[in-house]
Length: 416
Ligand SMILES: Cc1cc2nc3c(=O)[nH]c(=O)nc-3n(C[C@H](O)[C@H](O)[C@H](O)COP(=O)(O)OP(=O)(O)OC[C@H]3O[C@@H](n4cnc5c(N)ncnc54)[C@H](O)[C@@H]3O)c2cc1C
Image (cartoon, rainbow, N blue to C red; front, side, top):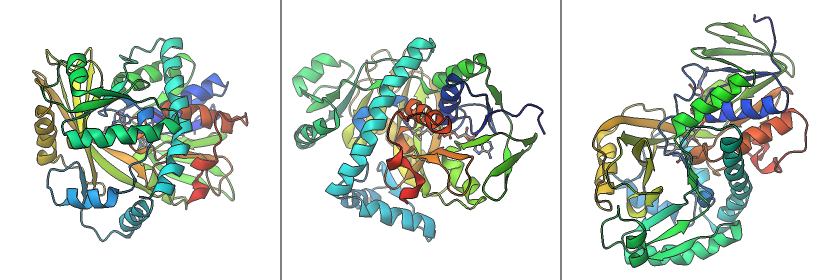
């Protein structure tokens, strides 16, 4: 057993665990982060690094079920559900399908709105205050359309998101060609979201960890949590491969691994792994100057000073850890339809990650059921980087019994 008990033991050293550590330290609490591997080495590593209030509207939108069914007939489509008898996945998919209507779309959008706008502001604040060297850029983002019909529909739909505090700007094909020379000629147009930003996710987690350590936080890597011991209404201790740990409070930030660990103490989390892929290269000579989403192919392209990444796909196939060649190739093929230089000179890494997906597209934040010193911060799906700072701030507020930065009710596990 360790001698000095921290105030808060944080399980999981991804972007969420580290953001929570940062805000807890800022609030004057001592923290210790336990990470099975090295910090930021899992889902928080090879993602696209975009910070996107523009993603306020959830995936579960009217028409999505039909679209998904069509995609399932196309082997390299960006969305795939593996045929399954797993009751958890089937229930999850049915719940997701049940939300593909106007009313629930709006409910999820309004709940995501608060998180994403606050987080966008807070991330820039941390980057500036702590001088995070993570290639942050407040450049906005383009959703690019090749087809005229797709562009016209998107331009119309963009009006609806003004209600959520977004300010989309419509760029004609001509304006887009002038603005972004990396694109091939003949694009129909783009919707520009000026409030979006981006950073390099591996540097962001490394820099958060640096600041956490500087502020006196302890981060223990190669420390796998093996078991959680509970008492009547409290978590008593954590057993790891390096020994036992205790704290006053326990915060679970285990990303896609949350359901199994939480189940071991009787907490049921409706989180499924939504597998995505990315390929990282050295930077092409003509690279997009801001993140762009190639909409018909659902490929996200992010350029940093130090590199270039293509990322996409949403695959529900359980915890399948294979790299699917067809899907990786589809990223390059999709990008080559839009970009003069679709790939960089040198391929550095092919990667997959499991997004921790909830069916209502909202994270699970706040007090755990059953245990008065247990806290949950998971289920961030496609937006863990974007929501990192507000998650950390909110969890610190709740644990420290301060006025929360945002009403926590929509994100409570009690909603399920
Ligand atoms: C292809 C792709 C692109 C994406 N692009 C974006 C994007 O552009 N913008 C955005 O906002 N989000 C994006 N995301 C989503 C984002 O990556 C995730 O939401 C986020 O990384 C989740 O962070 P986390 O800290 O919850 O999980 P993780 O980063 O997975 O952290 C959980 C940590 O817990 C550790 N752990 C697990 N089990 C144990 C154990 N037993 N003991 C100790 N430690 C343990 C793991 O090793 C891991 O480090 C993308 C995801 C994918 C897959």
